[in-house]
Image (cartoon, rainbow, N blue to C red; front, side, top):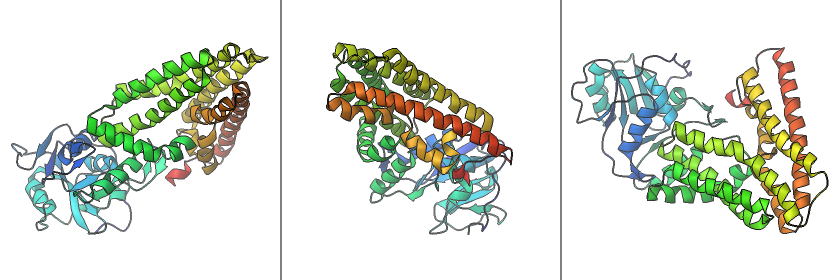
Length: 388
């Protein structure tokens, strides 16, 4: 049985010396075997040596994390378990043990238990559920959500992949990414996984779209530039989801993807303003407009950095309003939503002025956000509403 109260998270300590995957499962997930995915989970948790249950070799000391191949674990469960020696993970619905972190001398007994045998392990082991081991607040994805623990069979594969994909989504993001892209992105992510495309390959295709859109906007070719821009924003969703569901994210991939995301938007808006002249729609005060849009974007990013530095969290996860405002604040996707219908109607000049106005208003909101947080801190530390 799982404990009634959630124990305090452990202090990070020595990782398990080894990981062992027990059982066999031929069902593929996102184009890879269950064994391969569990190995990637263990390596993500800092367990570099991974073996199968029939290749235990000379494991004689330290502690070992054992995972059952019949189950799909949220990465947070494996990461949490790697820091909790003396723990059994229990599947809540069936109360069946599915993973363990035990002393090397208890390894054979743990394997037998996870394979459906008797429970010869001592009562001193903690029996914990997924929430207790993996936690319910995902700081990286900015959301509060129970980690998934799912039985993997040929019949459940589609539902498992759907749950994994949903779990790869950020909880706080713009409304286009949150509401428009999920289902088509799931389909394309599955195609990419089956074709063996890496997230960096997808990002590279998106980078070509960034360059073409800049060229098209600069020369006043707004419609073709917008088509390319929307394809790029869609691929920007796919590459991140592909990296998370296949556990193939890397430091270089993060720098590549987030670097492009951070740098290119102001160049697009600059090119859009320049392109008005080529389209015969030159607008007065275009220099001021450029400063408002580009300067507002840069200062907004600076404000976000100040907030994280001062309060130890992203500003958009502080209060429910802040999470809502992240959906519509003057970032790339909401700006494209403003620009697209007006460009289609033949008014790209009006569209970019509205983007400038919305950028200025968004900047005011973020400035007030910092002042409110400074005032609130006088009464005690501020915390994210998602972590409560």
